[in-house]
Length: 312
Image (cartoon, rainbow, N blue to C red; front, side):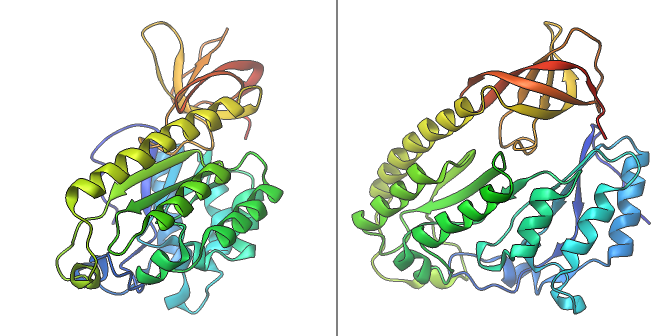
């Protein structure tokens, strides 16, 4: 028995797991959602077919940690096996994965996401910071050098891959040097979408009891500083895509006779849109090959290639 869709449209979320086994010091999710539990592949594929029959053309795979999918079923590589089957579902044009943990992102999974037809080469990576010292206080993996190496590996397989991430600024004990490390990472990373959030205590988390808290005014100042840098870098990244080919999933027609949709590097609602000019009629759900002709912030303008509709 499947859930009832609360909204229409050609994109729908598909939950692949719930809960989380990680114990990040700032996060309360494990306390109220419990341990990580994967849905069975047969159930996921059945729901994908049901969604496709309802007019969905893009599936957004969601969970608290998609890289953990299958570990409780005894197969940590299960996502690599399921993704091609989801992408091959009749009627589905694109499959997109949300919320990947850098510490768990295996080379095999990177390869499947980057190279499987019908799977968006899109990496929603939960970096959270780039200072190794702050990340250890968060009980997380990595640092600026390791994260940049991971991005190099992704782009070696898929040079046009989209990458988004969120970052927490003002975590207890964060120094100006830590903040500079984060800003240096952002400047070098070439991310398509960047979310900047100020730290705040969450009830029941370890971080709420940590010493060396920054006051709210200082956190707000740091957020403003890093967010301004992020906006500039995202605009530069979008501008660098001018001239690229893009497969755009059309979602609606605009008032001026153009078409709004999203390229492979643009997730629904959070990563901007692509507005397509076409000499022929298009409809929601069409997958269109287009050439990027301009940018405005994170949004793109593109021109449809003749004969480039519904490539799959």
